[in-house]
Length: 280
Length: 291
Image (cartoon, rainbow over all chains, first blue to last red; front, side):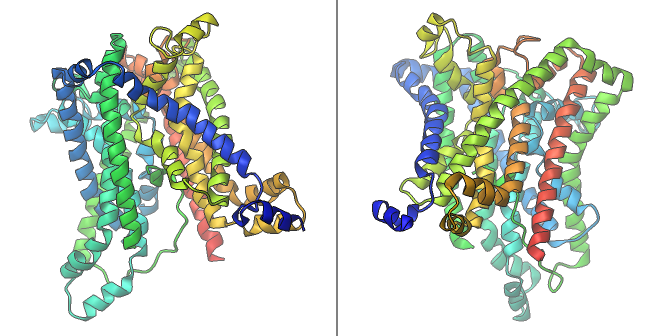
């Protein structure tokens, strides 16, 4: 009887209790901690006037930092797309000793604090570091350079492509490949015409996730980058420098640019994920 | 979005690809490249942390932990985690319950908002709270000064930034688990006369306990390790507002490399424990799926 009364009062899909309470908590929490604080960036920047805003976001140092941030993030994400594909392939399809440990370690950049990653990478790639001495002897300056930023951003983006591809690779239907092979298609043809098209949406999603993470990254980069103005300053660092000089409007304006870029990427990622779901 | 990475995967028993695969030399080459790439980018940094920490002996390693500033940093980090993790746990349970047990309009919008902290640079995550609570530039500067509150450059600011950064983790881990569970068991419990809370504690919670556990551990690891957001709001005053990651930076900049890496070993072990737990849970779900 109880249930029936309730069904009358409310739509039948809300038979379980707690909708009001949990929705209330969720919406209040998100509004207070996410929506209002994030809106502060846009409201503050819109209050500073167009001219001041434009001057702040097009300063020489700022524009140089966009180039460094977006350019190197793109390269790092592209590297991750290629090697992430390879790693995911090897981890799902081949069996070799140590595979499970390596598989588990893929999440390391996600769990290791960025500051720890930053100092570890700097120690490795400095002139006298284990890997640095090798690169420096080849004439490649791996620390306090754009190469260093690239290394750090590749490190932190590594899990994204691997982890988006793995489940899709596991679900690939082996029978389709067998059928193609039995019809006379070579391994290369099966790969380019069957496997790659099936994995492309997931691969692009992983690439976009790695790129989105890279443009905002701070902790793992600032140690190895050396932070040389106009050359190795990333945009998040420029925001921090503005704040340290009490140039709050400038910091806010540049943050608005970065937030807009991040939200645009989030939108693209959602579209890609929808495509990937339809494809599988 | 980015939660894809953190989530424990519902395990699919590995299919055999033995029927059709690449030739042996190709397999070996690809495996060698993948293992090389992962060793270079994942194993080496991890080894470097422990090598640098113990380079000058165990004595010097241990000396770090009698530095009063280091102890203050550890204490502050634990305090921040003790504030932010329980709050995000409550939120995560509420959000997962609302999102998975009911249908309502605007659900996908709600999930997008939930994911926003993943998309925001940690530096901006700190900045937004400065814009609200700073005594010189904040929206609430006047009331904060009137009541003599300390938020920015103090514990509340650090906690707020940390809560923001780690907000999605527990909810994001719970949502797929609860989704997979469906509503039937809860409905059965209610039909049999159990109340809402009783159903939640005796039916829902036991079903999602491993996902919940991992979500909490991951949230905790990220809360203790947050650097960028905390750096912006804390002011980094040694012994007062310096968390472990911030104090690692200070030590490193002061050329106290051994101490910096020694403190870093603690956070690295925490990260490793998190990965271990994730794999243990995935192994467990795989085992129970096979039975």
